[in-house]
Length: 361
Image 1: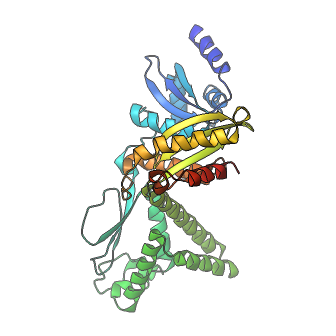
Image 2 (image 1 turned 30 degrees about the vertical axis):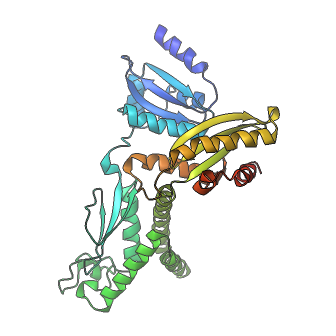
Image 3 (image 1 turned 90 degrees about the horizontal axis):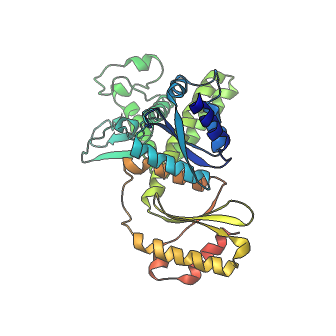
């Protein structure tokens, strides 16, 4: 009873701030790590009886005995810290972020006459194969590729094309590519469009799918139009994941400013997916020239000592952080700039100062 009262008082004393919380059992073991924009509101939700709790949360609450918390200045920091702690502590109630089966790849066998498309958790290195990924969700890439192939009626259920029509042909999902000829050439054309889409060089296949959706709507086939819409949404999600990978592989020096209030900013310096520096600045206490000089000095201190090769593939270990950083940059919560290595190596203070001033506009 005393423990329950103390726990209730601890919850009441929580601030309405961003942070990470660590749920603990009676032995002090970490059961669950979570993040919140408003840590008090989020932690309180666990201790309110609710029919809306998932079975996992209900079971977690039964074993809760205490919690710790870490306050941060921004929701971005809460995301990054949560990711770090889950990987380090591996709490039993968290989804396993490091499970290899949670990552997926698209492999296109270019040496195969059919240019077979494979979706796999464990791609095998083979000369001539094109590999895209890692992606965080096998279901998303399966839905995307299945959607594209079925939209253009090249979803063959007998890929080796043994000279007889497949089952999908009778269902209207295969144009007869299993019989060879011009239908097989059409399939290869679609595969080339998929490669261009994943390489970011041509989105024409998405435009064609959009036209198919509009045509279905015009003929009042709303069920088919909804199916095309879902396929398009899945492809957009896939493209976004590919953009995350491409952006991360550029090994950018990223300077970010987030306003905590009218007079306080938080500066983050990030190399690729690693936060090198985070500091608050009170603008009402510092002249803009002083702030610019201090930030420029931080650029030269942190970025020049963390120069890395420009062609490092994104690993499974950093994919979660890559997604967090990319999403943060594309949100409306911050302002950012990319600092070229050349400016740092040549100590182009004028260009650095201009880039910093742009962050405040």
